[in-house]
Length: 246
Image (cartoon, rainbow, N blue to C red; front, side, top):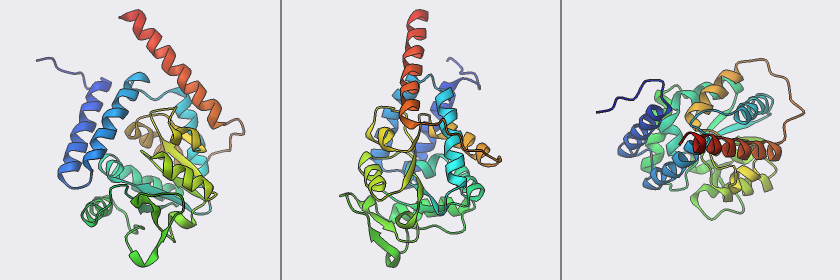
């Protein structure tokens, strides 16, 4: 049996799989979420299973945007809750952001499971659970159109990790600034968001929490479209390097 060194990125990948499988068993993660993660793993391999320079620039810009928002909201789905519950709470505290549960494959059992793990990790208030404060977001057919009027609906900045393109487009049409994690720099979500962090969410969230603790200055140089182009160049360089070493 070949042992994987603790510092090897492949070990982190295997640990993430274990967390998601446990999340599925605990009703946090939908089976479709497991499929989505498999696609993400492929892109993570392309970027070298490490945080790139362009991703670090996006993380800095995201931390600044969240800290300077009037009403920022961190949107949480099953995969996000299974992988980064503590980091979600820490980021919310550091940036004075609200937390809202918003699911593509929505049911009360999953909402309760996600709420449980968030509260266990330290969440005091969670939006998206009270039907009386629910309101529909225009331009979406999925269950994600149901948002909290005191949360995502009234937010000026929304962090939408592991996102679907339809909701990102709808949120942009609703005049909201969008921050997202997306390992695919060519996706609709990546191209529509104001800040796209092309990185594995477990790595990026740790760095985002760390950045959010700092006194940050706005970078006038940040441009999401240019940053995505740099991400693609980084992927190409990584592939060329691996081809040479093959």
